Length: 376
Image (cartoon, rainbow, N blue to C red):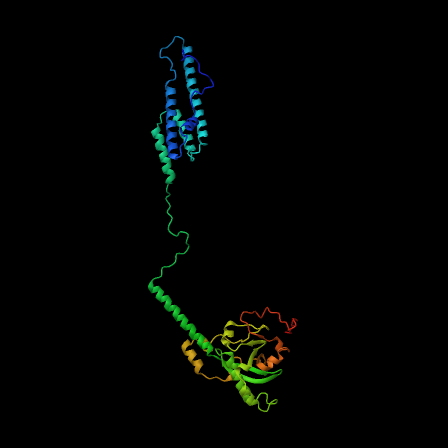
């Protein structure tokens, strides 16, 4: 009698996949355990669905005289089966959506959504097949498919450096040494070239001093020493002192100054430094506008023989480079006179040479800070 008594409509007929997972996965901490329990739940659900389909009432085999009634009974039974299948599919979809909210799920819900309805409809899948499918998914995730293209080492490098052998290194070292020797020979030839520097003695007025022969590699103090000897020979200052020659003999190089334009050239600088760097003065003029090339090298002669010819060949001073320059541009000044008159123009605008200073952009000012205006 109890079997004929209807059950309450509030009691669930069967549990959903989410409810079964909720009760069977309590306390799990490993993803592998969760997958094992999920496979068991799915297997049980498939088995129950298959049993429900097999337990459904089948139409009687005997035929009745009323064909209409038999056809109606068959259609009613097929309708119930179709309705039962739709209900199972709906429950399976609901369980799959709820399963996506489980904390142990790592994104395999999409695969389960596709596999579960197919298993319910067919009723032929087994738990072993589900386990093998999951294992295959794990393998595919850990080992992504390999593409046919291969990436070579250092593919991003545009130019591969050339491997240098010992012979190539020795050859490059020999070439560098040959270029170094060639440059040193050229430098020696340029420094050995003689030039002429016209100058004046200045003590408030310009006193002609003549022309001094020097080399491009000489220092400024050597020019001052030669100019001192020229002053003694000419007797410069004889109108002011009867012993002008004796006074010039007593004057040392440190007591003299070389002023080129308005720049005081220090004693330790070579003329070669200003020639090679093409140093400009405040007036927009080269301090030493001489050529940076050895004259004999222009004809294609050998560098070593050219330097030896420059060292041994004498030349007339009037034919040297710079012999026709303005002598007032180069002044030889007594340092004691400069110390007494450096507040008076033009000594007040003279300044020591600074290799780091740009004299072209400099604004010339006097001791009071007033700007000078020079006529071009």
